[in-house]
Amino acid sequence: MILGIGVDILHLPRLKGLLSRRPDRFLTRILTEVEQKEFKVLQQQAGGADQEGPLRYLGARWALKEASYKALYPHHKLTWQDVTVAKQDGKPTLVIPEKERFGIGKSHCSVSHDGEYLVGQVLFESP
Amino acid sequence: MFRAIRPTSTLYRASALYKNAAVSSPARVSMAMNFARMYSAGAGLARSDVEKRVLDILAGFNKVDAKKISLKANFNADLGLDSLDTVEVVMAIEEEFSIEIPDKDADEIKSAEQAVEYISKRDDAH
Image 1 (cartoon, rainbow over the protein chains, first blue to last red):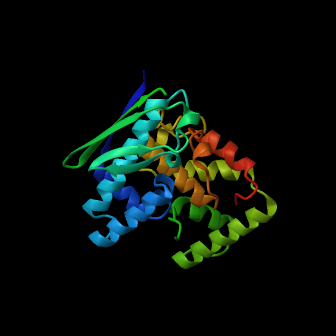
Image 2 (image 1 turned 135 degrees about the vertical axis):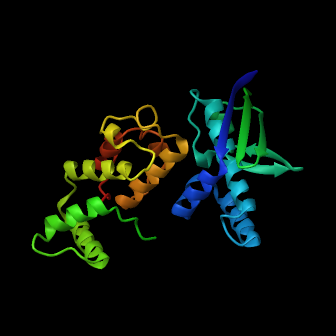
Image 3 (image 1 turned 90 degrees about the vertical axis):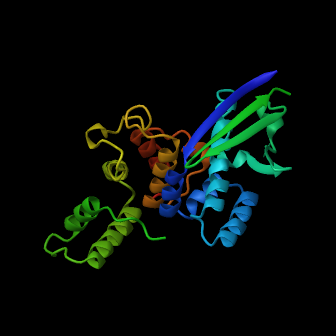
């Protein structure tokens, strides 16, 4: 059975602005440890956190975690650190270590980009 | 990371401590501010001081209409702040009071009043 759906849209320049004002705390708040490591690698490859690659990485995680929150609300309130976004065969997947506690079965997610906008969508099934 | 200086609150606090000192250079202003913070930490935080500092943070956001700022104003419904803005408000509060606010607590802070309540419960805030 479908437990809930959630969607979140993001204007990437806003993320860029926030990241420039709060370069450290914003990353540790939004990203899990494994994501922070991946972000650092992307940042080094791109030559800065404000480049397109790292920004899109962060934007996709922001949107999918917001969408996850909306999908599960009000059964539970997911926090940024409850969800890690991984990639499997080029497709994003959600890793939620405590999903049994939250009453989540399968999860589905998708991201779409158009220019400066990015949208993330999440669907949770009950176990 | 050095905190952003908001001229109004900085000058206010500096002038309160140094009534005779001409506040002219940024260095003097930031020094005065540091003394103010040390004094507050030792003496405990006055609620009115916490309220003012939280309201000043909100006033620092360009998209917030200054006329709508109040302790009871809901960040989203009254001040028009969305989730990205609210995360930024919480980070600004963390920096202002030198504390780290866990996600679970941050999620419950939806107005200046709730922020003030939360800070008043944190002994390590200063």
